[in-house]
Image (cartoon, rainbow, N blue to C red):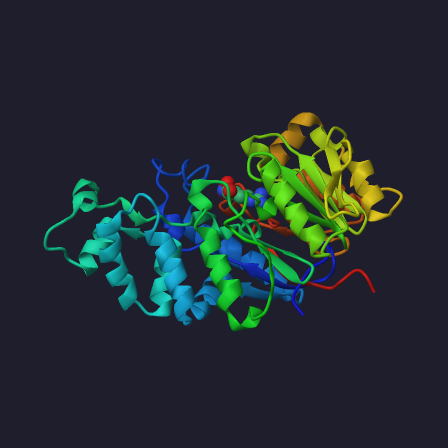
Length: 402
Ligand SMILES: NC(=[NH2+])NCCC[C@H](N)C(=O)O
């Protein structure tokens, strides 16, 4: 049965996205808008990603690829309709261009359509396949290499566009315009792919902004939600209400994080590596705060005063202490390795975690603390600012509760 009630139960099934043609769309003029720090060497990024996937399959994890699931979901007419209309309804398209593009997309088979939905469509590509007799306003004003449908290079970070909480999946509501369309694809997958038939949605993209990178399953029934650049306070309120009322959590922790690119999600500063241990950016470990949210008798959210994250979390988890693995790094090394996603690990089981090899200081300290580090290369993958946790959506983990 699909689902996950922690970040560390043995990982059985995960959804990844192998970076493809959408990364070849990045240029020095659009990379900032598309949330990449540079122009990745795509072939090498694919090799690194294949090695990441192999590290998972070697350890018995079933790897599902988002593009395959999407292609299969698109055999359902409603999935095709919803994803195409979302793409063509974006405000830069306009009616006339939309109807021309719609005619092209209608002729594509599932594989071709999935490819266009992921890597986008340029004006010259549309024209090559659907020559126009008389161009409309938008087409006349566009450059050939402008996009009718923007590419989705951040689809690579599958953690953000959906997140499982227990047996339900939250299809998130992405904050950055460059990423918003991603959830039209994950929603189509969860609603229409036979593998997920009947899975209830714990959240929907139409709601207030919540990104999966901010959602941390501390323990069964305890969910921490970062709020900063991406997930808004209103998003935390909405998600908390839904999780608590659905009985998917008994406590939700709101965790304010700095509104900066370096700390865009909660998982950029901390990830779980054991049932009671977390690896955390040393520069914030002791200043991070949390507010516990619970449901009072009248179905109203009760919010406690802010307290130190580690204490509030331990109390909610019903344990004496949540251990921070002290990476003992000096502030400069810590800052460099945090930027390169040193704190963004993916647990395969308690005390076994995938991490980027480049963060050698952090990894050495993790190993010294008894964590098995499965190191992967990420020189090119990292240019999108995401590590092993960001690049994976766990679909099934063994439950920690017997
Ligand atoms: N869960 C994460 N930390 N995801 C990282 C996402 C990186 C991506 N380029 C973005 O800016 O959205």
